[in-house]
Image 1: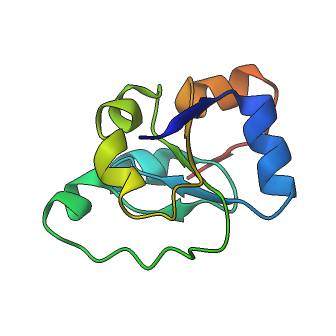
Image 2: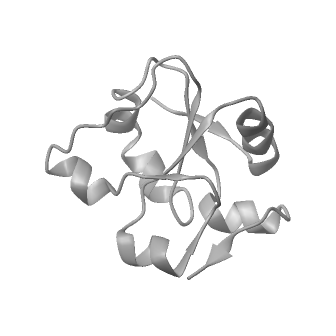
Length: 104
């Protein structure tokens, strides 16, 4: 399972070389995203898309609010070496904490 982490903790991990993975759908990502995040939409993962995620780094998964990531936590965690997190509040929590997103 994924460990819950807030935006401040996630930002700190990312500063220490963790990977941020956006599991939202392409249309959501196109509208707004966290800079530097890797796209891995859950719908593609469900179709068996291979995920080539580095196994030597912590991975922080996020969606819009954190609910999709949490409900798919077992499947997402299986793609990692166990050092994986759910960004509580998703991109909304990231913005509430004052961190940057980009639009378009």
